[in-house]
Length: 181
Picture 1 (tube, rainbow, N blue to C red):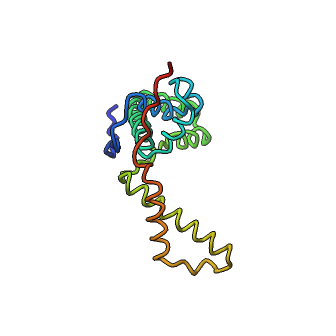
Picture 2 (cartoon, rainbow, N blue to C red; picture 1 turned 90 degrees about the horizontal axis):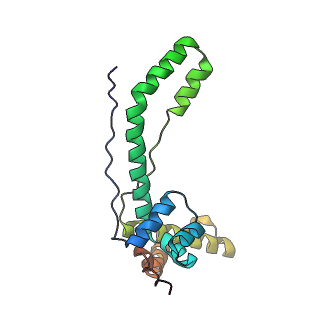
Picture 3 (cartoon, rainbow, N blue to C red; picture 1 turned 90 degrees about the vertical axis):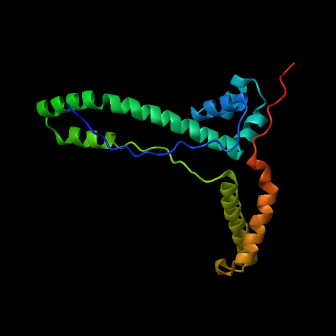
């Protein structure tokens, strides 16, 4: 039974800046779903360093990249099992043709890849700062009773630029902590 599955080729997400080996180890643990506390304990680093690292855009990009690679590996394994699985499902549907089994099969086949954002770290931070500026100005207008329709685009842009300057440190990952003596 030959099976041709269409492949949607997606480029692998790229790292924004090179990370140290310790940072990559932290990213691997976070990509696996580890808590900040577990990452700190397993790597023997302060919890605050893990939390700062997790908030950096290079780290977020690395976690996304590692999750994407895992997904690609799972996708290959699934493809290798498809023919065998189809034979089993076909035999089961022939032996017990029930709508419930068919519906369960169709629901189980819905596999979605993780979202990958191909924007640069600077673009991501600018978008985030713009959203924060709008939120802050909306809250200010609500507080002073100016209403939602009175947002000045120039004021939003100015506030977004100020926030970007204040948060530019997020464009790089924090340095590795000193080894414990």
